Image 1: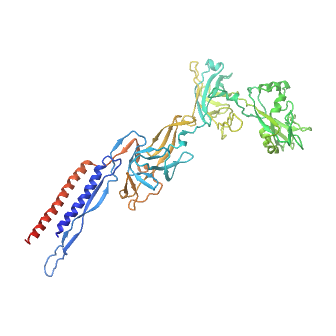
Image 2 (image 1 turned 90 degrees about the horizontal axis):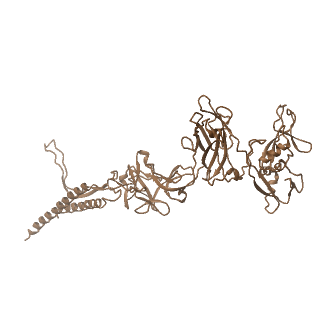
Image 3 (image 1 turned 120 degrees about the horizontal axis):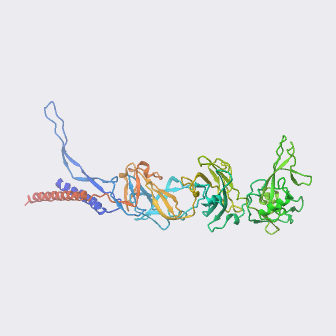
Length: 615
């Protein structure tokens, strides 16, 4: 048989393969992120009829080239234009993503990780981000408890999980007062300029702190008072709850408001009895009772018992003796080594076991004295062996009451007489004051407002910055006001939020938007990169798998922006098939196929002539 006949057959076969490649490209001209393929041919093999010979100097004959006859053509390689970017199609769907660069999305359908450039995603019923075409889960990195991305082994991105549908409330920790206090303002000269500050507790409940700024008898000095704190129903917290806050070893009658008592019940076992004057007596042993009697707790020098009764009435108690039964003190002992001229708030125990204020002008070295610190009945029980015995729910009961600490105490605002700028708050040059009771600026929690017994609500501290207030002429109009959050917007606080939307950033980070104005990081899409992306193996469904020649995937992936790449939301990458090139290749392939078929036809004609020689 003629070798040309088989060469023609080989040519037909390779051109048929090329037609298959071209046909597949054209068929996928509108396939999302499809990468076109091309085929190259190579000579099949050669039959050497005469080997080459070199030149011979002795005979003077030149060298002769080898005589080789080709035996056809074969498909050498089918390459994928993996790095050629397809055109963009705007969709407006936030979950449609386009990669700029040579990275791949990582997806998993339960049979291991696969890779794709197809960014047409959706969120399934379980909240997982998945491929629209086949339901493969999109893989990425999760968020830790601090809200930071953890770049660990990739896992499915459950962006609409139940815990992501709401934004946790945040307690207000900072606020800012700004504006002018005009000393000629009738409100400042009268009942006070009212300032409202909106803030949130740790559960997301909204409150309003109501302040007043009033003039004093001193130039440039004003009294800032917290009048009330009200909840969203406009109910006063200071009237509704019992704070159990005590401000020192003695109370200030001039600053004490009328409190509201909230009682707490304690249950005693049979080992103890309680009398009307709140003395606790064990079955055997010494009675435990309030150590103070009469006016020894807070009555100062020069005050009479009627003054003490009057003071008790400011706290909503009929007389001082009744008040004694409601407040339990504790003691810390001190034994000075040298005489000390100061005896303020130090007590001695008399022969009857009662405590009394020292009457001398100085303490005596070596004598044991007692420092009184207000203490609730809760604390008293915690410091004694009684605690283990009071938990029997079927026995006698005892009531303990606490009182709201004075909150009407004013803080002094001092302004520079020459410039009108703020000089100090509450006698301190610090640039903030605290919501209820000022403490040292170095305190870890400079303000704590626990307005219910136990752990009902806790404000860890609201620093209210006042640098932006001034005391200048403003035509008798004061503009001072307060907003939550500092200059940079930190510490504002917010209520619980419901998700209103999802956005995907250029680095693949996914954020949820909430109706409380907050955003929350939900996760980050991870990407895969390969040393030889053209070595990936196509698996259909717009998927690729790693091969020995592409390089391995490490299971973690990379940030798409690490080498300048990015992902765009609302855009899809289309096929990179160039129809003009494909139709040109179609023409050349058709002509090549025709030419090869003509080789077979001519070779057949020659064979026919050869057969006809027999006739």
